[in-house]
Length: 310
Length: 312
Image (spheres, rainbow over the protein chains, first blue to last red):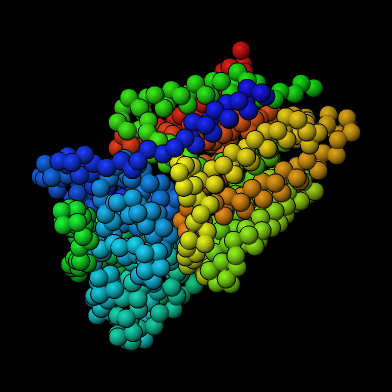
């Protein structure tokens, strides 16, 4: 037992020593840019990573790229770990697609306090929390609400006023999910359709499949399922087929991932939105590099969202 | 009846494995053996460490609690609502979190101990209950708390470790001392090794089990505060899959799933080994699938090695 306590003491001593100064890139060396994403199991972020890797290969002399992502979309702690680790690795800038609009702010603020430039992509950080925490982060991303509204209108064109529809939203705590839900709602309202249920599929295929199956049995008159991302749309389309209601229930998604294309082609999914994931990360990186060069944070940039149907 | 408490040699083996990982990653990746990198590992583990301490005590009795991840989410949600919506101070919110942890851990314990139901099943039910309550409490929204809670998880000025890390180390030391030196600890082991023999020798076998559930609940409540502190917010999704990380760390530390054998100090090394492995793989730029495969293999290898050494 004495040995155990002794090793504990050694451990404390080893870790509690004075910190080294924050690692900074040596003058003249290429700056390190860390791209911190959400789940790399999601095609959307995999595409984003590919776009970034290609860009870096073409601009190898300008910067060094660290790419990381988390296991599942709700693992905020892991994403905070990645932010801290990027700082520990001496990243000059962090380009992040935050898994939560509020909870990542303190970790990013800590990184900024150590001189790291923060660029927020994809999912916008909560403006009020950002202000309270005193964080400065430019946002590069699509107008999710407008994109979702256009997907919703494309779907509404196939229905008649008064038809019943349901929304499968993303993780309820994420801003982009909230915006897409709002965009769907805008379109449904404009077309006079009736939203009978809004439930979360937590961005995941499997979860959305279960949610969709329940919605289908609870609402026999349901005419459409609007899903806040393509993963969930695939899950929902499978549930529609399993319920024997293909064609009777329309499905819409968001993101235009590769896996959705066959479903778009044969009509199992009617519409989705392409927010050009590959360009999204690249825009964020370019903004970060510019900010490093200028020594001041850049302005927000809006990226394009295109409606995709068959 | 033979009681086996953590031998120093078992601890040494784990220390060697951990040291080996540090050296390996130090070779493979520049800057891994830096104070900043140590700090990043030390400050990511306190919640895991606190919960693993409680889980070790419970697993020594032969019990298990699968609801700790959800309970972490619920206790955090309660802290978030108390501080962000009701304007409570940190001490009061912390007390509330501990209370909720003890209450739910205690309920699982009571049902499983008094009604003789496997704790595996009872806490599987509690996993769903606690997660549902976490969403209800927060209306499925993240609660931003801000600097009022961030102090616990932020490194102390001039140090590289946070108060949360020191708190977790204190819990490990206390947990190990309780297990090795107190009657309570002996009873935990005796009940886990052979419940009938323990009963015959006059131990009220229900009590240590019940206490172990409640203590784990309390430590999970504390871990929730630490977790909120790291995020500056309460996230109702917090801790999904957390129970598996906790159990993996405890098992890598050589605590038996069947009870009767375990050590909190070795669970600490289990936590360090897994955290170092994850940090090292990220630093090397390993992809997410590779990270998961390697971590899984290490867990299985650790248990195999432990079995082999004991089987000799």
